Amino acid sequence: MTDWTERYRPTTLSEVRGNNKARDALEEWAEGWDDHREPVVLHGAPGVGKTSAAHALASDMGWEVVELNASDQRTADDIERFAGRASRNATLAGSLDGGAGGARGADGRQLIVLDEADNIHYQYDRGGKRAVTDLLKDANQPIVLIANEYYEMSNGLRNAAREIEFRDVSARSIVPVLRDVLRKEGIEFDEDALERIADDNDGDLRAAIKDLQATADGRSEVTVEDVTTGDRNRAVGLFAFLDAVLKEEPAQDALRTAYDVDETPEDLLQWVEDKVSLVYDDRELARAYEFLANADVWTSRVYATDYDYTWWRYATDNLAGGVAAARDTTYGGWTRYGGAPYRSTRDATRDEVVRAIAESGGLSMTTARLDVLPFLSALTHHCKPRELTVAMAAWYDLDEAGVAYVTGSGETTNKVQSIVEDAADIRSEALEAHAEGAFVGGDGSESSDDATGESESLEERNEGDDADTPDAEAAAETEDDDQAGLSEFM
Image (cartoon, rainbow, N blue to C red; front, top):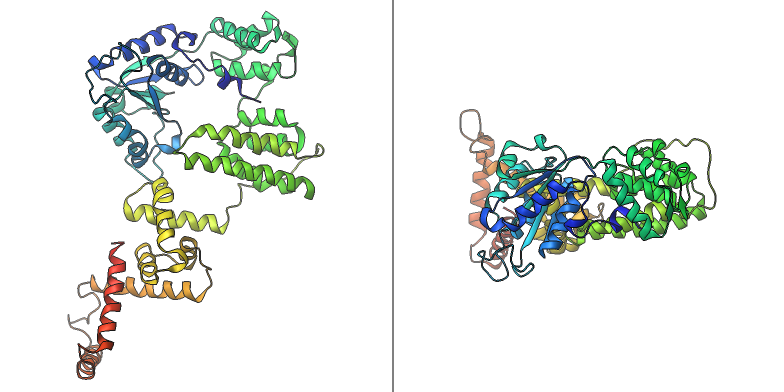
């Protein structure tokens, strides 16, 4: 079932309802962009049409859209990777002198859309806010920031961008939108029903359309008696969602419930995967896991396509509607779902390895996971070459589980264990070499026994080995190889 908020999203600014003043200001900003080169921030409550207006504007102007629309893409590295480069691109003609108000689409512009500008993510990188501020100053392309809470944005961001406020959409403006949707769907309606939905949604056009779809589902006519928005819980809890999918609701209703949970499809997938075995029998589980596997493919495709979140809708279809359809019956009673989904040891190891890579290279977790980790895995597949694998383990201070994860080797194999041991030796030698006397005796000299032993061993090596002998040359080459391998990571 297609979400009506997506199916009937405005494709041109003239279709944006309820915020005529803001719509006209946005169009004026775009057509005069060559003269002022300012970014703009669209702010207002959720569901009033800010993001839709930005995309409709791009359609009108013939501009390509580059969008960051998830709060976990707020690191400095991600902002540079996905928006920074695009914002500095010149037009296809190589000139920025053409007028935006001329022949639309002929200037090759890109509209950079940064959603949730009031919610920059700081979990591992502290440069997100600074990166956005720098982006606004250096951009050669028009930029739209979108925020729910304008005054939760930093002063730097607010001062760098023109402000356009989107107000709550009045019930009087919502009703015509609902009327148009039902006419396009070929569904008869009672005008009072539309007014009821509009009044119950407090200026949120998106929520009104969702209510309309829930009310009209399976009906050829919508009457005021059919409207149930007053009892609708717009913030469905996780356990209510699990009950809907795993126990109570048919596929379509379970899918609708998924739209009302304030969690990403990726998180919902983990919850359903972790809890489905508490309810389903073996045959139902087998069918459910097929849908969950499909959902996992779709969520993975988001990352494989540079964060194209449109794939999430297919993940939701499978993890909610598909898993619900895998049931042979409904289940009653109460189920103890327990806490958050179990994280496998492999997942925990992956996160530790990615964090080590990110901290060592000053990277974001995203770049470490998507770009660096696959590269390291290819370089050290099955611990070959060994010297490079040892150097990698030493540089990132990996244990057996970490080496096994990166290389694809067995954690308990002698090969992996010996690599970790050699890596520990390299780290100890490096620590001692940089200690600058921390390991000498209390009087500033090496202890007599250690010094004597070291002197004797040096004399024995000098007397017993010729620097030109094959054995000595082989030893020297081995030492050079180890140092060369470590230098790749230092």
